[in-house]
Length: 145
Image 1 (cartoon, rainbow, N blue to C red):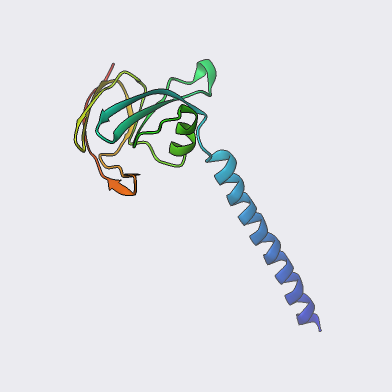
Image 2: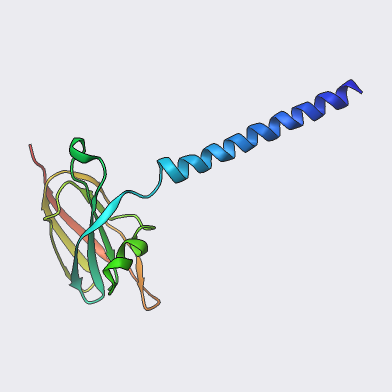
């Protein structure tokens, strides 16, 4: 009889602990690790079906430096839809400058910039009319003092 009561209480405690862990994970993913507070700063056709979208971090005020995120995607006609479409994607470049010279030919994208690079990847994939586009991304970055 005593063991049955002990097992019931251990089961209840374990259930509560697991519920708190799942709740904490969801809180972390939604509030702490959520999408950044960005706004569309610039868009440009790089080549054919490859378009560049640059977003600027809008939060932080005067104490946070400017952060620009660079995305590649297909043509998005409505500017209001750009943030909804790219918000679920990872940028290929995160930097402190918005004046990078981005050029391209076919599926090759060349980026030249002066400033800090916070993150960069040379691969990206997106779909245009059901066809996967895998641009090759080259970067030439000069740091600042």
